[in-house]
Length: 393
Image 1: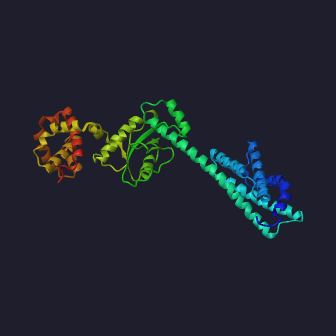
Image 2: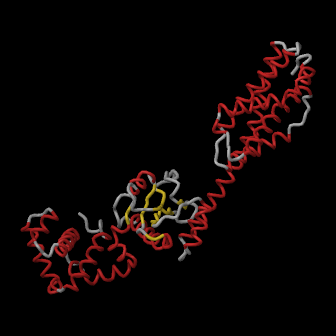
Image 3: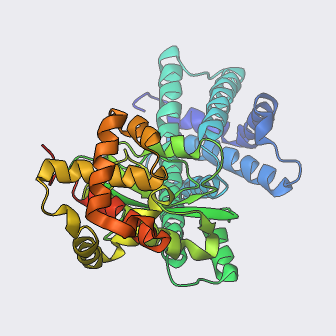
């Protein structure tokens, strides 16, 4: 502060610092009652010490600009660390410092004038500017400590959530272990969960936008989520909105100790979706496709059975073969009621009767055997899905 006489005048004010600090603390407590913690007298003591140290250190800098600042900056960096650990933002602290700065400037100026050696208007303006520039440095130290602690805490929570997610997806985790890791990760243990298998729809797919209770595993080779309370109201819509840009399949609801089973079916459903065998829009509900999922666990076996059971259709032209297969499936599901089959396929009943006579001629007594009907139903259902385009046209 290149103003003549400032160091000497500041030295004369040094004795007033404790009183000014006490007044500043009272004003802070009055204007910011949320900053007062009656249950923690040590906190009030720390505030008083911090305010007095800040004001006193600023006056010392006015007297001797080379006064060291490392210790006070580190002290306030630790204040930032403490605020972050207790989950508070810095808004209230910054408001408190502005109140304290205003009191300090007013009282230092008033004491100086009372001694008939007041600062000139120029010096007073420079003091005020210097106070707020000084507080900017203090605030920077607090913010650095707060950011460092917040990042460390976030990293610890994220690491804990990853370990929890990997544990849940493992083989028969113990509930006690789950609760321990969940507590460290800040994750309330739900009664039920569902695993959701994911794959990016394109290269620029963004991170899923989901609430914090959803465990996200994008770091693994086959990304997946764990959704608590999957049958709760609005959960499916939440996934639909939050997984835009992703192809997703939701596994069956399971207990928290059996995520592995839900994930296995979710990944199976996702695989069938990517191959076009399941054509529902994402997210696909695995339980709505259990028949085809069960059959498609062994594609080779399905093809072998289909080749044997549907051999009577092989001599028909491709397009007619498909129409006959569709009619056979509808007939099996409608008890061979031609009127119901016609309504389902939106074809004239007379046409359906003609096709059904063809099917009876091709398959003979198999159509009357309940055991044969069951196998035939499963095979033709799967064959139609897996050959959706082969016989079209």
